[in-house]
Length: 299
Image (cartoon, one colour):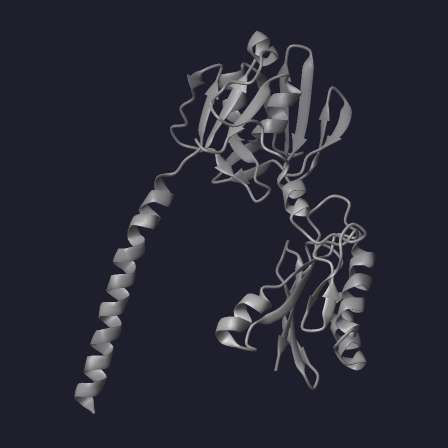
């Protein structure tokens, strides 16, 4: 028995080493990947605070870059958490964590926010640059950003192989089943749209999962969103309830919705909690500053 256990333990150790060696090159390549920024053909150096892609697929740059590379005057107000960028007659004001910003006093909206990272202030490159009259071109194949200012911004885009990318959310919608525009999808008797007008999103990989693992995967996974402009929280909860009532016991759905509605804003949290009826297990969870996830599984 002891020899068997030792042999088994040795086998696990060897398998672990093989896996580590196999995926290490991938880790190494990913770690070396960094965003390159050019201004009028000049490569910009970032010796310490590096640009990064945020959750909204927007390139964030240290605010110092704006003043040094674009020639703008930048002021930081630590009390109001505001960054003021001024170049010529144009003044842009951004507030950390806020999607609303102003350009020459007029309020505009971003799909991301300025943020603080590693004790540095980062701002969304595209919104700030375009507010200052620059042209921003994202080259996905080169993982680089090209910024053109002055007369260069008025010329046709360079021929590096790609053009300004489409909005990520619009591309996502184009691939989805959308309420009022396409037919509903059906998974194990649940009829639903992948994207609702209210903002509710429903995903499912159950059909693919079932082929390999049987009835063990998540059947559907609705998500109540908070972080996107235009979402309607109250309507999302109604849409969610209608989906669940199709197959889940009414009393169970009532308990689920009562728990879901305890979170009404992104700052709230919902500890992971599981509900069940005779057929399904339903998990509800939501972390701080996150959406509400509802996972429906077979028992």
